[in-house]
Image (cartoon, rainbow, N blue to C red; front, side, top):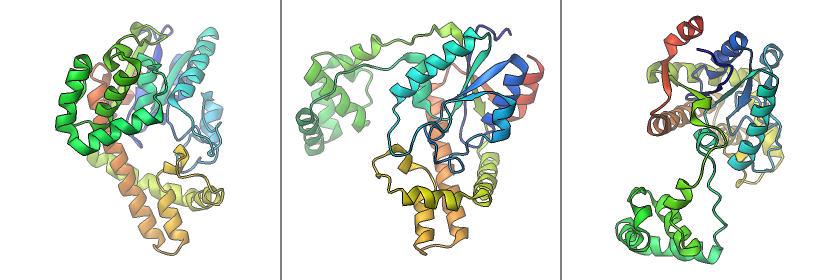
Length: 302
């Protein structure tokens, strides 16, 4: 396949070998890599976010890694704006943009666009949340059907967050959430993308996650975590949700020993990988699924 006209997307669970595969692919097709991982954008989280190494940067040009301070939130809208700029610049230089990561929301923003819904006033948001809490999802869904039949046709009756969102949007904008989504489009045509989903068996992935966690500790994850925690970053900031920070805090406070730090980080990482796989299966039905042991064959056949 001729990849020169394509924007390549590579998605897979954490520790699935995305970075290594992307670098090999970039070498073969004269590509440059753009980060699509919401934690790898932060400067101070190099080890805990498993950011590519200096050696990787030297071999292939990487973009949107480690360029945001942890004290600010970095939204998917900001990422999309930066990613589009990088894509156009890379293509202008006759290279192939390769988007790689495990943050599904970033890929969704790139391929489908971002819904530009006006900010809903807090008084309305609070009113809708109280209503949902008082009557429960089942009755709330019936009320949504009365208020907005279009939204109720594509919102799951058990999805509390989406139910509330659909209700408050219709209430404030007088326009269905369905219509907002339908009118949203990507800046790129569907045929511009070549989408790769790395399919990795859970039992092998668990082993890789365990080894990677140990490697992170060996490389200095504890010291990195201490530095981060000393910065007193608000718990509301995205970076504060990085896997490993709570465990490192407990280690500093002498609540747990290093072996338990490693075990807990591994468990949380496995849980995160499972959520990534679940999200991928639900949202990436049209992607080219490549089994982990077929990646080298894929590269050979390019």
